[in-house]
Image (tube, rainbow, N blue to C red):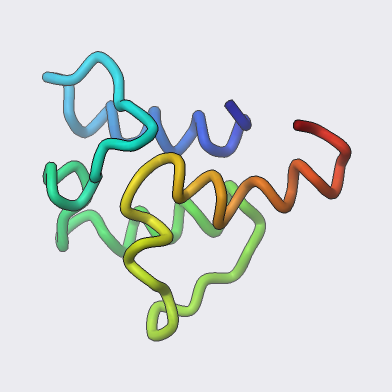
Amino acid sequence: MADGLQQVKSWILDRHPERDDIAPDLDLIENRLIDSLSFVEFVFLLEQESGQSIQMETLEVDAIRTLAAIDTHFFAKTRAEVGQA
């Protein structure tokens, strides 16, 4: 798991101490792990960890729905650029 994605996962787990882990395909929104109160902070964290600017008006919810989607949309390109799998 990419360091940035691990930071995102840790951020979510810190806010949900009842959870030990998050499956890559678990719907974060449907399971209320990301809600409207934490959404802006979550997007800011994604920007910091991925190094990408995120425009709220064009952000597609499916890009942040699961850890696997977050990895694909925000971290896979970065790994490919530095030659990691």
